[in-house]
Amino acid sequence: MWESFKKIGVCIAMDDFGTGYSNLKNIGRLSSNTVKIDRSFTMQALKNEYEHKLLDHIIDMIHSLNLKVVIEGIETKEELESITKMKPDYIQGYYYSKPCSAEQFKEKYGITK
Image (cartoon, rainbow, N blue to C red; front, side):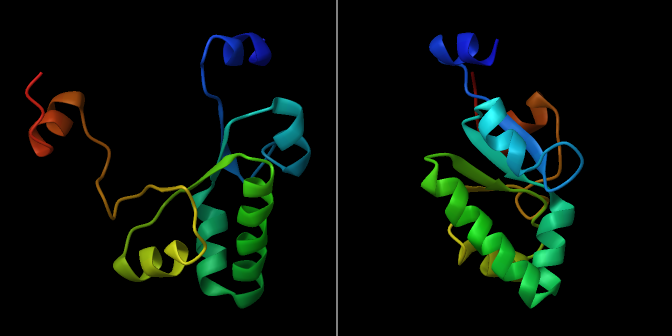
């Protein structure tokens, strides 16, 4: 099924990497385009040097597989500065915006269509 989706241009993201069933084994098996690092994993990396190095290596490994990396859960400028040094492809979190409706999003970013 995943390969059929990919053939028609659908991109697949593995969410919540570092928790539950989102583990290293599934990166290859699920053949996703993007791996989203869970906030709980990110927070550990921001508090602990060992976990920080581990996350840095995981990002490098994911990039070596030609996949994109999203770091979830960034809420402060300090967190953003630390995570940015690891060169993820995307960063998401309350630092940029809390979840909002489509209308709120359009208003916030001046989208008129």
